[in-house]
Image 1 (tube, rainbow, N blue to C red):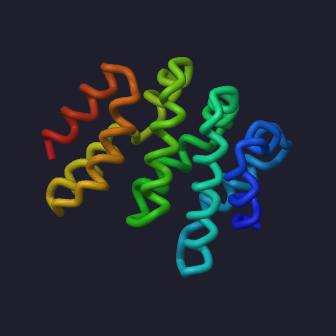
Image 2 (cartoon, helix red, strand yellow; image 1 turned 135 degrees about the horizontal axis):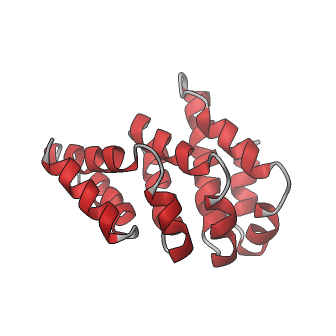
Length: 158
């Protein structure tokens, strides 16, 4: 199901309608929240997070996606727990949602945001993985200045 939604959401003309479909964001959050204990669960999580990214691309959708009661928490969970494509897509979705200024305060108040993003930046530097560091930095840079300071001070203390 997540694969079909991902394909539908990849088409620009579907994104606005899909985002407003009752229960769709709930289903994507549920699929993303499940622990990726095997390859099928990881595939479903990756597809669900990629769909959230696609749905976040139109400006008109960003407030709807960010204001869903669990989307931001699930993106942080995926960034913290995953190491591959799902993490990259979650960082990209977070950065995309933060492009809308009205979302930044909400994003900044998301529990564990500073710790998780700073941990990812430190991990990326330590492992010399530019992609990890770059995606975490993109997500952080789209957020308000005070949160960037908090993220950087958390990273420096590691």
